[in-house]
Amino acid sequence: MRAYSEGMDITASEERRQGDLSESSAENLAYDVFSRACPSRATLEHATGRWGALTLGALYEGSLRFNALRRRVDGVSEKMLSQTLHALERDGLVHREAQPTNPPRVDYELTPLGREVAGRLLNLIEFVEGRMDDVMRARERYDSARE
Amino acid sequence: MRAYSEGMDITASEERRQGDLSESSAENLAYDVFSRACPSRATLEHATGRWGALTLGALYEGSLRFNALRRRVDGVSEKMLSQTLHALERDGLVHREAQPTNPPRVDYELTPLGREVAGRLLNLIEFVEGRMDDVMRARERYDSARE
DNA sequence: CGGGATCCGAGACGATACTG
DNA sequence: CAGTATCGTCTCGGATCCCG
Image (cartoon, rainbow over all chains, first blue to last red; front, top):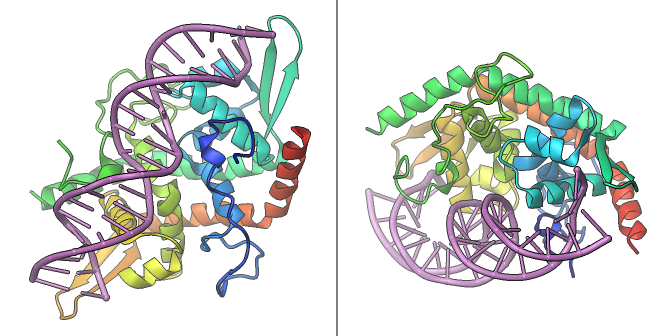
C-alpha cells in the first residue's frame, strides 16, 4: 500500500484523489492548499514540517553529508532524518548524490527548486527568530492573563 | 504540568530550559532554531504546522469568525482549530476579539506581527502551489525509478 | 454560535540493533 | 559511514457529547 519500503510514515495517508476542488475562490491555481484533497498541502507539510524546515535550512548553506546534517539539525534521529530526506527528494527539493566508495559517501544538496523553497523558508525563519522577544512577551501576557 | 487547561497538546513538551546552545555557529541571534532547546523552534512549528499555516493564510485575507475559519480551512476539526488558534494567540500572532452577545460572536484577526509572518508564509505557499507540476513530475520520476 | 472535556485509534517519533 | 528494521512510547488529531 505504501509508496515505497515500509515505515515511511510521512508520506502515508496523502494519497487522496483529486476531485471536488470546492470553489477555489482566491486564485486560479490548479492546486489550492486550502482544499483538503490537494497534493500541494502534502508538499508544504514536508517542507515546513518539524524536520523538513530545519533540513532545508541547513542545506541552504551548502551540500552536507548524512551525519553532518544530523549534527546540524540538533535533536533529529537517524530515522526521522532519513525519512525527511526521502520525502524531500521525492518532491524534487533535495538531490542525493551517492558515491559507491568504501566507506560510502553520500552528499545531499538542494535542487534549484529546493533552493527557492528554502530561501523563502529561511526568510520566514530568520524573521521569527528576530522577533522572538516579541513572542516571548506576548506569551507572558497571555499566561499571566489566565493567572 | 501543562501550561494551561488540559489537552492543549500543541504547547506541551516545549518547556525546555535554555542552556547549552552548542556553538550557534551561523548568526549571533539569541535564539537559534537549529538548536534543540530553543523557543523559536516551537513558535515556528505553530506557524508552519499542518493547521497553523493554513489558519494564518486564511486570516491574511481578513478577520474571520470561528466557523467561517473552519469552513475555509478545509478538513480541520473544531478541536484542532481551537487548539491552533490558542497557540497562535499565545505567540502573539493572532488577536481574538470576543463580543459577549447572545449568540456569542468571536472574531479572529492577525496582529501586525502575525501579518508579517503570514505574508512570508503565503509567499512560500503560493510559490509551492505554482510549482506543483514540477513537484508532481519529480515524484513520478522518483517512484518509477524504484519500479 | 463558540467552544471545552473526554475517549480512543493511528501513526509520528526515538532508541536500539543490525547490515553493506 | 549511511542507512534499514524492529519495537515501544507518546501525542496528534478526529469523533462525540456537552455547555453558556
